[in-house]
Amino acid sequence: MIDVESRPWGEQVAVDDPAYRAQLAYLFDRSALYREKLAAAGFPDARAAGGLADIAQLPLTEKQELRATCTPDNPIGAHLCAAPKELVRIYSTSGTTGTPSYIPLTADDLDNWVTVSARSYAASGVSPGQRIVSTYNAGPFAAGAVLAAFERLGLCHIPVGTGTTERLVRAIELLRPEAAALTPSNAAYVVEWAAERDVDLPASSVERVLVAGEPGGGEPAFRARLEEGWRARVTEAMGIGDIGVSLWGECAEQQGMHFAARGFVHVELIAPDTGEALEIADGATGELVLTHLRHRAAPLLRFRTRDHVELWTSPCACGRTSPRLRCIGRTDDMLIVRGVNVFPSAVREVVGEFAPEVSGHILVRPRTPGVKQEPPLPVSVELASGRAADPALAHAIRERVREVLVVQTAVDLVPWGSLGRSEYKSRLVERSRGSLSDDRSPRDPYE
Image (tube, rainbow, N blue to C red; front, side, top):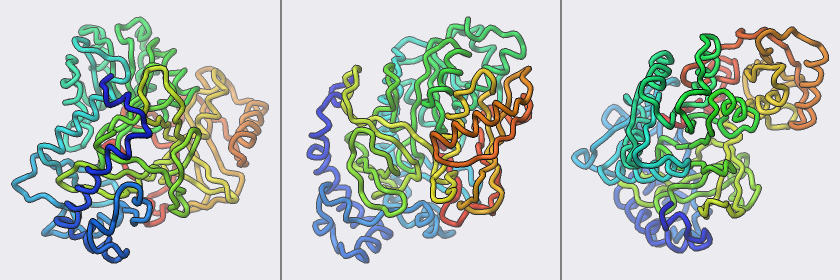
């Protein structure tokens, strides 16, 4: 752990305020989007916008808002601040909802990304000289920047890529890495793949499994299943491609992911429905909002991540003083059933309590397009291998979901293997793209 990570969190705003004011001045000077956006909101210059203590008065930034400014002449968008000659890397998203979004970086931006990512992964306990095998996509996607963080940490990196489970397991057997980095869905898939082929994964050299790219790694039941299948400690990390590739990382205490980007990014919590700023306090929940402090290429101000999180500010035994969080779910996937917000990942967490009768795989199947649904909400729950459907089990799951999440469900127990597996990321909701409202396009947070 480095000194900055043990600084009292109460001092962080004062330390970051000068950088924030300089970032605002840079936006007014170079960003057509923010110059117009802030002027329209009554802030004609950086001085009028104030400091970090006043940030909640400024307007939020939406992903769709950035996309709307893209043109053939400027495919990145009007938030681009750097000249072409200043850019050293341009990542892209997958473009599942249309044209890919582009994420430009200057040399300093890229170095800052790697610095922060290295902090987030160092929290897991990996140490210089160890080997780490990864399955992250390193092509056009921002996750590729994580790979440089492994080098920054002094690790020997063994990249095998996505969709090559046999190659991954073979590399583990022959090269004996102490750590593996992959998505939670991929980690679970490898456990099943190995069991079906009588591969003794728990006896492997892997001592730590570092998961990122989607919610799930911090769910107690899901984490327990991974730790049993790998016989390794599981910690998670999280990033937002538009802001930074890996911003949060969990330590060995496994009590939430520490904020690793202090000094580079400012954190806020808002009420998702109203946008009202919420206090960052122990046990607080809301939507994560992030602001760049030292970014050059395309800085973002009060960017809505659409990640619904729970925060903790209580002391951690590791000595890091930043807030910790766990992602409850993506608001892109959230459904509203009779006024109750339902995150599919939360349903999966409750269902996971019924292991070993169930496999842990679920699929929410909304009956109608859109976010609002009438009860009962259909949920397919996959049985464990060799288990038969039992009405009493379906009833118990239904009652437990109602008790914990305050929502009525129609639980359909389906045979082992009938719900899809993924060697990258799993979808928990089965609905067409057309059922999403315009401002809730799905996003891959780790691309």
